[in-house]
Length: 162
Image 1 (cartoon, rainbow, N blue to C red):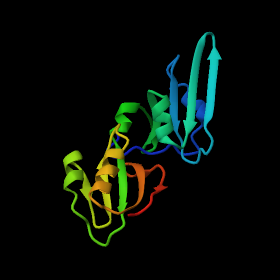
Image 2 (cartoon, rainbow, N blue to C red):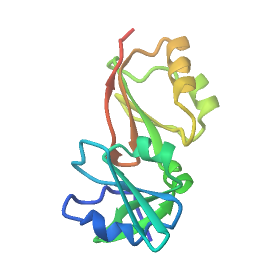
Image 3 (tube, one colour):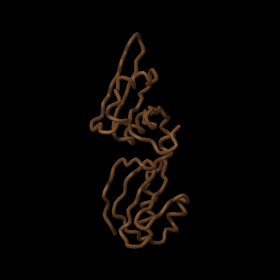
Image 4 (cartoon, rainbow, N blue to C red):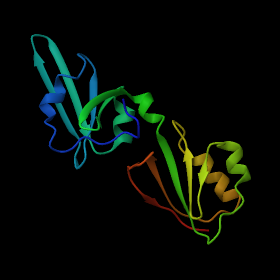
């Protein structure tokens, strides 16, 4: 299961079908592509209450749900939030024509990957602020950063260079 990074559920997936995957008494997250507003759904039948929270923002869901429904190829998979967090990376676009010395950053994040214009840091549950502080103290010009789930872009946030 899941040979690669997690993927968003397609908009064609009926949310009503996901309600059956929601454990009673818990809120199941649904990571849905194109879901620009947070949707809160619930059913109650014979004392069996099921809740679903749907959003395109995986970070939002990870903070609120212990299990998240995602796409695994053409199937739906429900995974614990901490397993999805393991894929969380910070992407840093460098504002220099060369890759500066990254010793301090490598000391903090030994598994970082660096290319000519981008640094990828596996941050897991960290905020990524330590990585950006290491860039600032090492005078690494940062043009932009965003959180990525090893391939599934979540959002982009422009930062000041310099």
